[in-house]
Amino acid sequence: MASITPKTDKQGNVISYKILVCVGRDEHYKQIWRTKTIKRPEGLTPAKERKEVERLADAWEQEQKANYEKSRDKRDKTKIAFAEFVRSHWWADHVMDGSHTPSSISFYKNMSDDIVSYFGEKKKLNAIDAEAVKRYIKYLNTEATTRGGKPLSATTIVRHYQTLRNIINYAVRFGYLKEDPCKYLSIKDKPRQDSKEVDFLSPKDAQRFMTALETEPLFWRCFMNVLITCGLRRGECIGLQWGDIDGEALTLTVSRNVTIDKDSPDKIHIGETKGKESRSVPLSARVYGLLMAFKREQDEKYNGVLLPNAYIFCRVDNPYKPQYPTEPTRWQSKFVKRHKLPNVSPHDLRHTAATLALESGADLKQVQQLLGHKDPATTMKFYAGVTKEAQRRTVEGIESIING
Image (cartoon, rainbow, N blue to C red; front, top):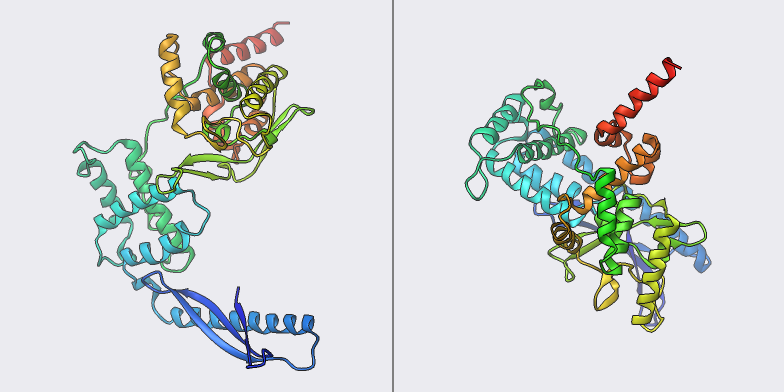
């Protein structure tokens, strides 16, 4: 949006307006500005004058942006160097567009630095054809190593390839490449990793887990119960505030996700959920009772002045700051060892919630809504027919129908 600044004479009367607009960024990421001064419209009321100036500023802004894009289009976009495109366009306009979390930005930074290092500073973007991509995949498989000198894992290789695909797709969308070279790769040319079985607690182990929790502090009993019954992500659970609980409806509103951000003062980032949308999750009466018992404990600690925006699972010294994301993982690791339970993480409790829901008779759509998966294929991939017990009951159900 254009910036509008009134200019006055010595008596303080407005005589003109200065318009300032940003039309883009140069190769060094610096903003490119255009300015214009227009005379004050005459014979208008203050309100109509303001609207007219805004209209003129908006029209001039659109004209300047169009002229700038037109001048850039005179260059052959496909002749840009790959490294320049990554830094000046994909990184500046896509990764840093305000929609990515600090952890995602850090991930893309590491991946893209490695990719640019491989292709070099001078290689043209349009020189990265299917053969160049295939050779890059071969390099990842046979030559690339970790900082410790070990070969890259299948997961790391796939992530490098996916980041390159992300860069290429962005280039195609904005006319820097005419087509996606990766479409010419066969299935065997593309890196892949073996499907990883989902870790979760069996019903019997889940019962052992819950029994062991009874002797633990109320803070962790509440945290683990929310994970295993509501299917929240670790960061979503950490982001819960007391105002998110609806006691009448027995629901939780999940609208925040807390992740690590090493560059922020608190070393955390509080953002949207992974699916970018809030969701309402049912609470059992038992878990609601646990949470209310914990709230009474917290009210007593803070002299009954907890506001709705206080975090349920807060830091020891401040109820208005969420705990650090690795704390639950560290605590749970010690907990399962202490009680000789299967070595599951907080995220595995989310998987447990999904599998137990399926075993209790929930369908995939209900599980998808519980977990907040935007794409039902994600739910299908991880949880369809995930336990042998559930499969056996299905077969036995069919048997009982056909045999009366």
